[in-house]
Length: 360
Image (tube, rainbow, N blue to C red; front, side):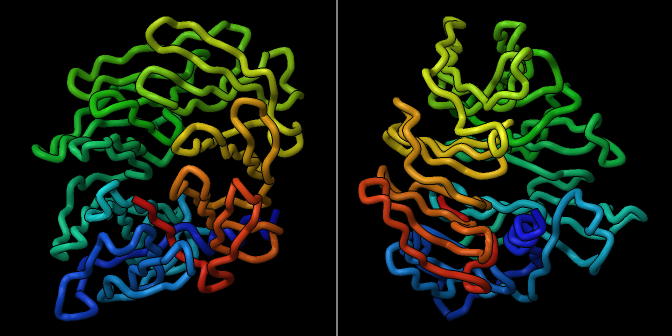
């Protein structure tokens, strides 16, 4: 457990300062890199085939680590830190939650959601309010679902708003006690997890109307991942079987029909709850995570590979999974996994694998 915590703290999360300077006289060719790593004072392009890393953007100051809301935040500087970072699907914009200051408990006194244009170097604050700790960008990059603490960084005050990037207005959704992350089903609808017997909420980003997804009352829901705009993949279990591994269910949003898959998570020890999942582009494979992470064939549940630690991951094509984590729990790595051969190719290890991995 200590090794796991150390590895997560190495990767998550870095601090960013307010200005960018280009590493050369010319703007970077953003499209030339499909994977990026934000580390110390540089944004690096990572060749996922060779592991070669090259500087794309030089930051004006060094970065510092940050974890929210761990009590370890009390230690360290009060300078600007990064709580979360994402890159949009075009590879042109990076969005960051910048935190600054510390109260007596170590929590940031100020947070801002910032947009960086990698082509022009322009930095733009899109939302300035306290307590921001998670966000999700709509597919067409017109809106952002923002989750924030209303006060005191207490779980019960977690709320959401929908930020319109054209008007810079963030409209509150009106739900308290939300979990993370938010997922977009399409450009208009996002999914939130709410503290309720039926926790799944679909929010219309234009009208802010909220729809509750209702499953049988005997199910306890751990997480939900959109497969499409109309289908959810839900990790759940019967309330009478809390000591069992998680089960998986397809849910059709339009009809309300649900279908249990003919398998469960690998075991209760590492998958008593499942909090994250990621499908291959062709929906043939699923990587799901509890304490460990399992890559399976979606239709049968057959295990392809289990990973000790997955901090970040993304599919670069239908058969190649890129992972930042650890295969053995001993060292931080960036590696790719080929589903056709089951081969692992290590791209970086140790310090060279640190930072926040960003994949459009």
